[in-house]
Image (cartoon, rainbow, N blue to C red; front, side):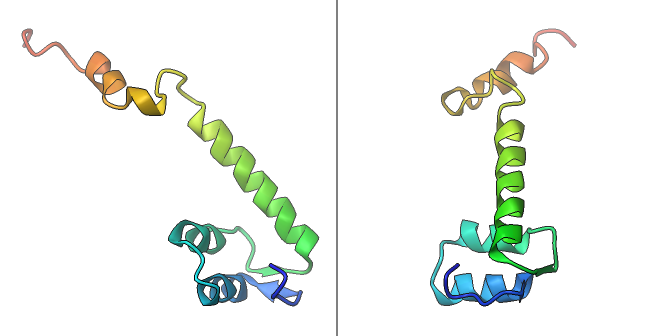
Length: 84
């Protein structure tokens, strides 16, 4: 975010990302930041790091649910259709 002067609001970060034609997932990430205002780039980077940790730990919650197993886990956990 070299084009952002700090302090900066979350909305300013979103607008800068949109102006730079960032991918939608980047823009949505900025929209989901917890603070309304960031005093410094370091403060912003701390929230980024925390969000990354949360996302990584959330994705590892079920080790059976790897990307190549989508559908298999749901099928294994589904009730047997032969038994009412």
